[in-house]
Length: 251
Length: 308
Image 1 (cartoon, rainbow over the protein chains, first blue to last red):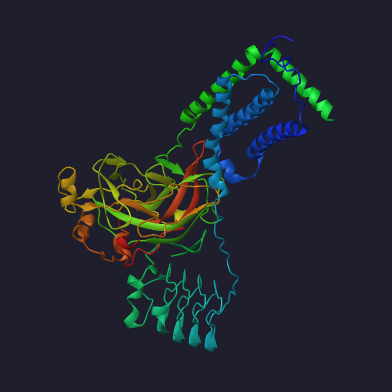
Image 2: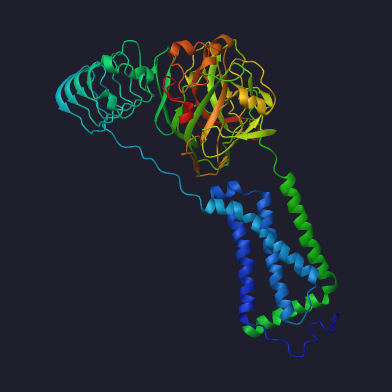
């Protein structure tokens, strides 16, 4: 065989038998690196696909090929063949370059899933122009209800969710608002002078009001200074009480 | 089975031995060439993302259920600023449900924009600090836990005009919608509230007032990732909003105070309407997509910029 000599394959008088695990190791190494590359390229792991690019795959391929090369070199040396030092060095450098794929992959692997915010179910009451007396809606979810033109007397709204409700022209007499969620409520023309616990309202954000809206004198400053209420200035109000759900109140 | 494998390996090794005079140099050259190729690709292979064009029309006709989610949005009641501009600070949580990496840092490369409406006859130009050079690092109080780099270099930035979107954003007909970029990340400047020139370098720190920097600790959000800065002064985007000179002059004396005047909406909306915060992206074919949107919270609020 050409290329024999001291380092040649035939030079070994008793070539070591090839253990089955060496072959298995090589096959597993080759198929797993190629397989992982293909999976990464074709998978629906959107995060991985987003952070990876041609450069990332090239680093992975370089590392994979070098790893296979190192395995072959190891196999060759066990058979008594000599692998030049420069070749081994380059193969190890190539394999080491796999470290450049770690950063992006680590980011994706350790990424915590974003917090899910479910939209609670609610009862959309339609109580337009009704007279409502001696009733308790405490802690009830009345999101998106319609109380426009209604008159509420001795009603307990404490802790209730009235977000995105229509309270236009409604009148409140002895109504408890402590802990009430008023996000995105349309208060234009509402008379809340009979409201109690208005300082303790849970959420005033995007409350739409106008110059006809009335609050009890001592707390009327809430409409101007509290973060939340927005006066009608002749154009639509965009509001958002749940993430990614933008709605509008027509002016 | 083992014998058959053994003989195959021997055949492979025999072939390697036969061709080893060129095999090892070839393998080495191949790996080296690949290494150089990948290095070159890394250096030259990531083209910068295109910036928002000066004028565009949004492809999307909706503001809900967009791939980038904003929530917990707050802003300060702040009107003072340099060169007839109001500085407005926003703080929010952002979640990326898209399949792309979104740049949420500061400056014009950021996907984040403040959407405002100006009267039709106004074409705003922003002046804001450049990302460098930095001549000092100063403790500003917000953020309180790190020094803020200070620059003297000011750049002009043209905001983008969003055509045919008044109905979408609920703005009056006689206004036009503009997208303003945030100031560069973690850079501030010192300015004179009266508009007089400050001395160079450290002298300006002695005589001037600092601006509020954008402070984003994580400038990219990966798909499925969220970002919110819970510490004081972190996770805040600062926008420079050009306002008319006479209107701006009302706030010159307020830069030292914790709170600024609460203006009636009908008063300031003659000059500027705050619509909301958005994330936008330019696709490969040049179309601009709205990735996310949140309406502006109330501007009538006693919220000090130093507490965000």
